[in-house]
Length: 167
Image (cartoon, rainbow, N blue to C red; front, side):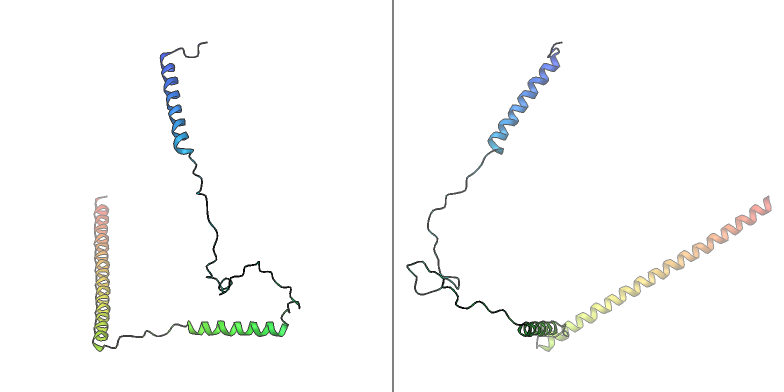
């Protein structure tokens, strides 16, 4: 049994080998590149922009924390309940402030207020006219449909009468 016994098998092997080698080279040069991040040089500097680092004197020695003489005191139930009540009051005040208010005109010029009111009235009138026109068109279409239905009924009745006299 011959491996490449026909001319077409030889051509297909050559073409397949060529395409796979090109694909492998493209992946090797384009797809497998890796860029290292740049090396960081320098010293970190405290600019004093935080509350902790904003001092006039920079200590030369390492700062060590002093041990606490008394353990931290936990709040009592009464203090916790008072804090909860204060939070509830603040939340209620914020909700009251967020209540929607009436539309307030901020411009003092009476002419601009009249213009806005006139524009709004014109818009409402145009909307009403369009609504009336649409309703009139619907009524007209209904009337046409009803007339067509009645005419069809008359034709059907006439056809029945004619077929009854012939038969």
